[in-house]
Each structure stands twice: as structure tokens, then as C-alpha cells.
Image (cartoon, rainbow, N blue to C red):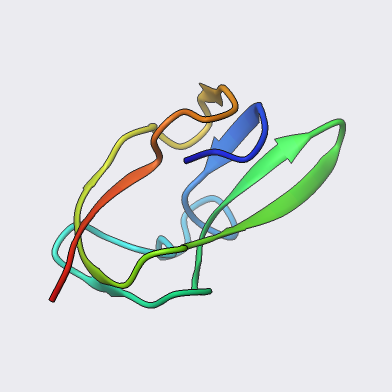
Length: 75
């Protein structure tokens, strides 16, 4: 879930590889994306470990606090 509202970015820079992709694995504490709020980029880290099923927001779109960001299934 998004800890704050802002603009979601799924990769560190435009055109670069995403932090996580559907079908890929994610670990607890791994960066899954960035949220830009008040001109600051906040690293968003996973609180779950498992396989990424779905990434909800499209990069560059507004997300609200507590909005789901990714779906993860346990391994």
C-alpha cells in the first residue's frame, strides 16, 4: 500500500528497467518504486516477500495514501 499520496514511478528513470515486474520475485525491504511528493522522491519498499502478480498503478500516475501498489503471492 502506498504510504503517502503522490506520483508513482515504477522505475528509477524514464526508459530504464522497472524495479519489479509481474512474474518476478520481491523480497522484504526491496525497493518496488518511487512516489514523488512535494518535489521529493520517496523509495517505496516491499513489506512482503513473494512473486509479483500485478502492479496496480501505471508509472507517472497519481496514487493516494493506502492505495494498493502491487499484488504479491507467497512462494
